[in-house]
Image (tube, rainbow, N blue to C red; front, side):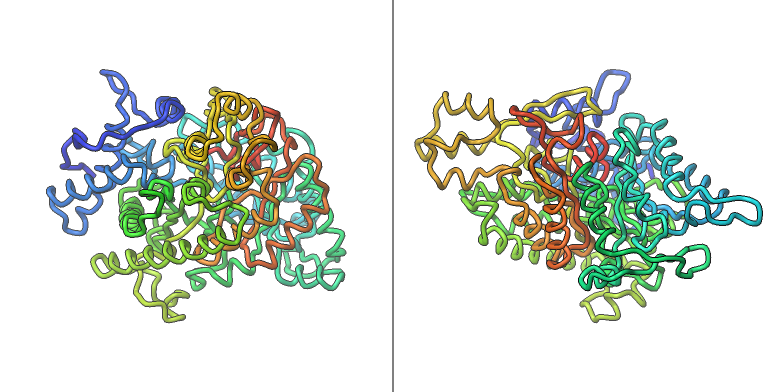
Amino acid sequence: MNSPLPNAPPSAPAPHFTPQAEVVLRARYLHRREDGQESPPEMLWRVARVVAAAEERYGADAAAQTGTAESFYRLMAERRFLPNSPTLGNAGRTRGQLSACFVLPLEDSLDQIFETVKNAARIHGTGGGTGFSFSRLRPRDDLVRDYGKASGPVAFLEVFDAATGAIKQGGVRRGANMGILRVDHPDILEFVRAKRSIGKLSHFNISVAVTDAFMSALAADERYALVNPRHGEATGELSAREVWEELSRSAWTTGDPGLIFIDRINAAAPTPQLGAIESTNPCGELPLLPYESCNLGSVNLAAHLSGGALDEEALRESIRLGVRFLDDVIDANEFPLEQIAQVTRQTRKIGLGVMGWADLLIGLGIPYASEAALALADRLGGLLLETAREASRELARARGPFPAWEGSRWQREGVEGPLRNSTTTTIAPTGTISILAGCSSGIEPVYALAYRRTALDGEAELTFVHPGLAAHGEREGYWSEELAQEVLSRGTLPSEGIPAEARELFRTAHEVEPAWHVRHQAAWQGHIENAVSKTVNLPRSSQPQDVDAIYRLAWELGCKGITVYRDGSHEGQVLSHPQGPACGGPECAEPGLLEEAAE
């Protein structure tokens, strides 16, 4: 669509980006022109005007589109909201693919498998990440017609991984994938162990689709049936406890596999009349139908602090604008496949989430590992969902509901509507956009008070020092140059000479007990229509039984999935603190892979 909007960005406000953010902007987002590289304000205006121009189809004239674009520009310039990376990088390009998350179907035939490889390559070339369920593929050594044996899901995982390695997303980053296998597939143990070898499946995160029946068998310490997808009949059985122990050991070893609770996901699916959900996007927060895509954006909670208090009305306004922005992205999008365009427009799924959660808690004086933090997560999650649905309802009145509204879960359950979007809320990892916003990522605790982060596929190393620490220390009278140097050398506060209140407030990811990580995820999940991207950080000294306990707790508290990462279990991990390797975000489940694949 040719936009009639003016080319020059509004004169105010000028966005302020940190030096670290400017490194990422120059390398990844700022377009190059004959007269040089665009400026950050020009980038934001480019994105705002392309997205706002989509409203022409709903009757908005040039003046109305310009007004909307200016609202979008201010929202981003004030770092109150940012969309996912493909929107920032691709808006205004010839191939204007703006979504981050895709799921492609994978059927049990050689022609269809390689058709999916081709389609995934097209998506990666536009900056998107892909998820696949390998559960429909017949197991290794199973019959193929009357003359051969099947290679099995893990062999084809390796084919997809090799294809991904040959393509950079959008020409600037490696592709990212999620590979999922049902726990009742006969090849489940081979899949669970697939990433134990160093460098294996380096472009994939993998997760096991755990069923309710398996969890019941685990609770009763029973065996459960394995089902061959070729004919749907049971062909063997395994001990649920032994499989669970292998899951826990592999996740302890490498961070993979994570778990998705597939029956729980489908029980909450918004459009069951369109089919079952079998897979998610690469970071696990977006359960998607085959050929469905979703565009994401995140509200920076910390940017809504004012005078030591949260400005809830300003937050509501950011949420409303964010929903409108993401709905417009669907119409502004140049989808890589016609099937994706059709399914996405049928459900109009969007994923608005939050970042800066840990920074907000610090600004409010609330320790991450506290009941007060969980209570606030519950309240703000409710505010996010209520406001996002209200905004979607208003859009439906003006533009019409999503086409699959009739027969949807929301329509059947009597959710006040109709709604413009089949889902509105998601918690993404925000790996790179949180750098641009200058805030903590997603709902993670502060990774470290000072840390190094590799970015741009290892081409840049960025150093961060938490801005709230010095301010708090000066206000409370414990800050000094000596303390500053010690924090820089260790990444955390020392145990001596610091007020107990400060030590609690500034606990870092590895100082927060794992159960608090899971409880935060569960508190937000209670209000999130899609799912929550969250990594539970474990110390290097942890044991497989610690993973066992975390996975069980996630199930008990109602999470839709769970991922762990043990410190130092990967070389070259994305985040590290001065004392050595560590990892503090969902993007770290595979070093460098998910840095921004689903934000």
